[in-house]
Image: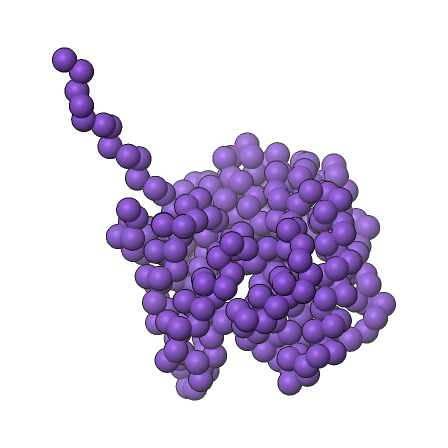
Length: 293
């Protein structure tokens, strides 16, 4: 008699990865081997930070280089989930800004050669060094950001890939409502969100972290394409970042969201090197499994 029992459902797994440059600066082959050996299957790859010998500028990133690099990671079973190209899209010097935006467009044009569909950046600052400035939350900075994003989104649409924008306290897009405003204003299906909960917090708002993370998930959920995972502590009155599981971030709501609404979403460790990443992974997996239906 056939059994009426259904086979157990496969347990969902957390799609954990790392930033490639947190494992050192080396050849693509060496980095991919290190990351695979540590048990991770995906990366955020910032070429100039991660690949030894590269000092790329606008016009330097060729399809051949992209293909060779992507193939090195694929040989070791590591997916390039995000290309990191963290330029300042509202750099105060116009010629510099134009070169930076062209460099970003270079990444969009060849992203598919890496096997990647998402190129990420932050929203920038009126200060050239990306430091906070009161004018970052002003209307002029916002208009400048929209113009820059609109320009690169044309290239993203042509290439069939997405731009991932990350909100950071002190930058032009400093909160989830500001991110939602950008998404609604531009209205592009090629504009996605890279969510880093710690980057939405300041010393003053840490007591309200639950509300802030919940708001981000509520407002941005359909647009989130990747998550950055790190932690924080308050020391000497300053918010300092730490590896995931070694600080004060309440990961429960975020992991519950991923487990129930976004399985497979890339979760990329930050501030975690080869020595600390396995413990961070264990921490996140343990708490993720508690939230998995």
